[in-house]
Image (cartoon, rainbow, N blue to C red; front, side, top):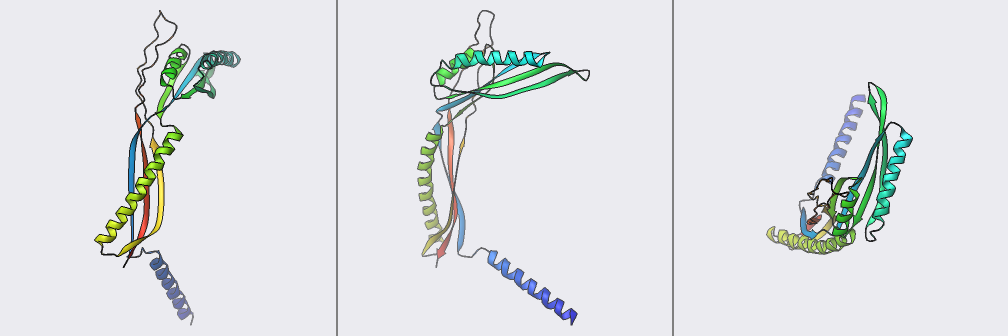
Length: 230
């Protein structure tokens, strides 16, 4: 009796597994596919990160040197009304010599953002007297990207329906019903190549870096499933 009870239990488990597997199986009249649409958009925003790098045997004196350099940079940067400025991370770390701390290094970032490429290029050149450029990135502003994505979403949805109708027609269906739809969007920023002229002995300011805004790709993907009508 115990053997029969166990066999019956196993049979019920196998039956439940088959039912679940059958429920998870995609219906024969359901088709999944996706549509990708994209466009090239002129970049209208630039982000520049500059850093102050200092070294000193005493942490307190190191902090004074970094704060002094940042105050100098901020005073210059604030004279450019159309550029957003923000201080970034502040880091200090020891330098070892024979397993003993011999000095300290520190750095702090300054972030510049705006749409006035020529003004940011000029400001960057001036700040290179005491700061170093860490990165420069062109991108599409959020508002411009949102506008372009809305246009692409409309195009992608129309293309999705057109593709669904084509599939239904070629598979001999009388029509289709949309089961699920998912919309995803993305933008790829442009990383420019910069030409940095080194400081000469006859000038106190480095030459402004050459900048070219370029363009970025804005993409929208519409994926989903349709059920074919028989």
